Image 1 (tube, protein in one colour):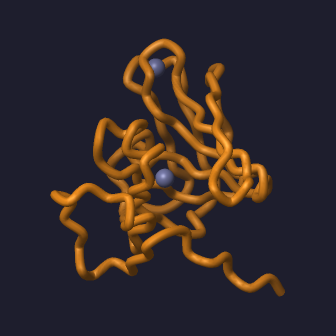
Image 2 (cartoon, helix red, strand yellow; image 1 turned 90 degrees about the vertical axis):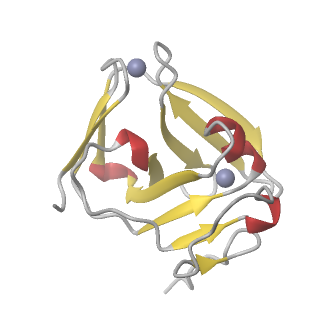
Image 3 (cartoon, protein in one colour; image 1 turned 120 degrees about the horizontal axis):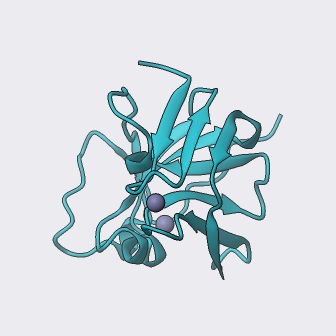
Length: 141
Ligand SMILES: [Zn+2]
Ligand SMILES: [Zn+2]
């Protein structure tokens, strides 16, 4: 069940087609993600921006991260489904929320990040790579 992937929000106003495999899939337990995801982690798949084709008009809300980067979360203005996120330091790629991507698919997180902000009750799969904060970016070639 690989690319292309499709996605839709709860009300159907936003749909998408993604023509690439994700670079990575991660859980993020930062506080902003906990707010967006009703208390738990967001699960995010990073795709090349050019491979993401969104139909419908997202609403964006942003904040300045500890890194100094601007983070923006895109969601459906009608039903509130979290659709995607983008980072000012990384315009060539965006994350899509895994819940937005249609099933069936074989996408699954391989890492959990920002664990220092996770609630005490959070259960982290020991099979996942674990990071207290943001992992360092891959070395650029
Ligand atoms: Zn919607
Ligand atoms: Zn986060």
